[in-house]
View 1 (cartoon, rainbow, N blue to C red):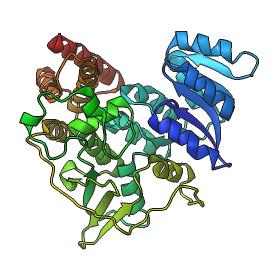
View 2: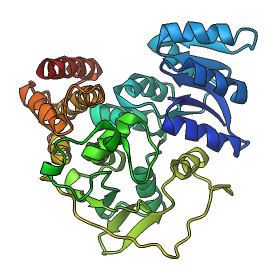
View 3: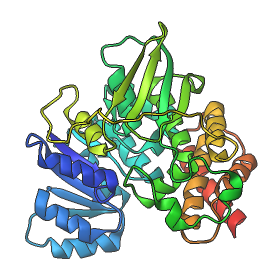
View 4: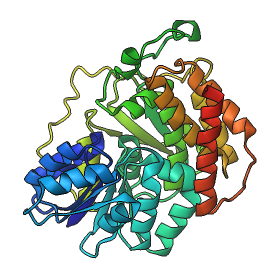
Length: 378
């Protein structure tokens, strides 16, 4: 099988390449990244892809110079990214880039009948109705890679669709158990210090606000065709139970593994088969598994996500775009941690609702939300 790794320098992308190293039947056809051409160069030397796509044109030129004589084709811009994803030799696209940037490449990959190993939740958050319809029409598999969605997907194998509820677990992030008064002056370093997972900065901030879990709930709604009312978010600090499904007869099937994304990546790339894995095994002895209700009062962004998800249409688009701007502004020291959900809520309230936006409208709404959020910040 030949794969294209969309977001090869990020957390999921690098772990995908680790999985490839001990799965000899998987070949890397193309690598795609934003600006980090030095890391892509190292990946090229190890995995020898046929093509590389860089969003940043300057980075692409630097990489092209370094790869001269290797036979690896370097492309740039959104057109080059799409070409890397849609090449005839590609079987599966690992959509692991963070944020809205994953939408167009994933959309075009589905349009060209590529299976998708999906770790880019934002694609479904902002365009779930378009992506799921297109995947069904083109008979493309959407195989989740987020650990929680992979867990749900695995729990549903061999089961019928009689779901009573999905139990979506969350670690609670670095500030679990704290009240609003304790979060006024939290630092960037404290916010990035996730207790269980090693992730990129954006997802780490989203996990601290619990907005990540709200986005995952919207993603689950589209992946598994269930209303948000049937998705129960549960805080599980140990991150051993990645999620569970309760059926109409009251039985619950849960998925357990160590907090390591490589399990979900390997399952997605080998689906529908399971192959012997070199990943470490979970030791159930001395595991103390606990579950708590989320604190919606302290982590207001979580409730806001669920409200936007239930409303649907343009609301999640505005929510997601505003959040991306707010997270970057927090990392730049321009706003406080607690201002993130406040500014998002204000941005959502100011937009003109669209019930079922098309792709062009989604991109325009996204741009409007980013500009409006920046106005509110500055």
